[in-house]
Amino acid sequence: MNYYKADVIWKKKWEINNEEEFVKQLLIKGKFHNNVPENIIKEYKTVEYLICHSYYHYPIIDEAFSKCTRIFELSINQRIKELDIKCKESESLNSKIKKLQNYTTESLKDEWDAIRKIRNDFAHPKDSTVKGITLINAFYNIVNVLNTIFIDKSIIKKAEISFESIQEQCLEFHNKLFVLEKDNKKYLIRKLELCSTNLNSNIFLFAIYPVFKNIKIDKQNAIPMPSFLELYDISFDDSYFYAKTIENDRVIKIYKTNHVEDINSLNNFKNQLSKVTKESQSIYLFLLDNKIIQEISKFHYIHNWTE
Image (cartoon, rainbow, N blue to C red; front, side, top):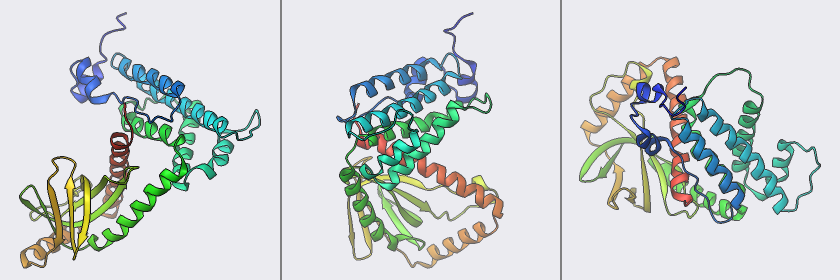
């Protein structure tokens, strides 16, 4: 048997033609801050190799993520030792996470609990279903989580306070009618939503919800998803929102509009939305939540850690 032959699924389903394309598109490398222990970083290097070898055998990608859940448990144990927290020999992972709650924020503890539950699922599988490529975005999240375990609570808290401050100012740009000016073009939007900030609180992730002038919405996947912008140098001035994009350092601005044509476009858009079934709306909201989570995970991976 040839163990170094590409699994046909990569080309058949995702049009990945060779190893180079696979690594470029799907390998999530380890990126860690200076306080993450060296042995944790080395453990994740094994994950990188496992991801790469799934090019030859698709199910290995599940083994790569299973390895991540064990690194997570190792990280919790190591952090417990660093902080000299007393634990019993047979103490559960759940109990250890609870003992760390005074050293992190409530939101991060919830994220750790979510990974703990996934770890339990991998440790005690109910069937042999291969999750495969659906795990790719989860690798961004697990790298983020491993980093947060070794971050001082004060750093996280400072970023959360900054996020809440900007978020409150953004409420003025919710569920109304606005114009977004970007790259010498104008776009009609109905909502500007702050999704996250990096730990230094100088780069922000926003979701921009569009209003389309000519669109017929008849099923859940036709409801427009928001676009996402990474912004910095944010300012609010007399109902105007200004910022620069990470993409090209150009200034964007957002402001209210009362033009009749714009109002008619919004009313038509709302009318189309009203025709979507409740089931389709629920599916859309589920997909939207997942999309936002994925974008936030990638955002933190890119802007908080270094290789």
